[in-house]
Length: 221
Image 1 (cartoon, rainbow, N blue to C red):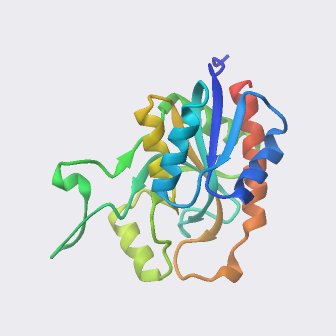
Image 2: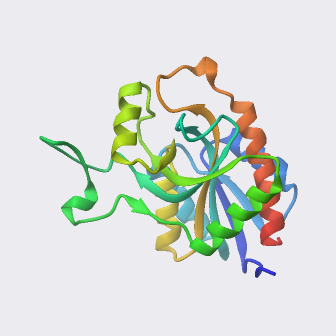
Image 3: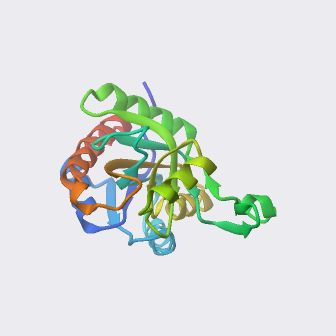
């Protein structure tokens, strides 16, 4: 049997609608805190760090909705991040965009705690009520809205499965505090041409609710 998480669990979302969907899955649990940390990597990181100073946490899980790569995911699928990639952190060159890694000053990728990723991926995959993918989740300050941008991102980062706006910040905050962390997203729409009429927010919220319930059972809290 896998060990229980020592300390509390912090689940970080960006907005209240995601927070409510997750709370519906976990019910009342004094060892689990759920916060809406704001939109974008900076405010999400700041509020994650502030919360991490309020209690002793054994894991941080960033959960929320995301756009999915259309050839790799379907709406209503779950994606567990094998990396959270700040896809617009870098520099321009005559050859196009280059990641910050090539300057040697920093990295555009932060990686999850592998044992935590493995446990949660296995649990969600065996649950039987959602399709689960493992892949890179992009963090972008500007949501993709054209097929040209989608194609450019997929060319640069072929391992990417989804995009959102907070993961890199939240994961970096947890890493700096030496707390195991992972990013989990529910696909509400496809990356590419922006068309809000095709978004399926409630379907994605329902996946977050189910995923949160499974996660709590796996981590025995």
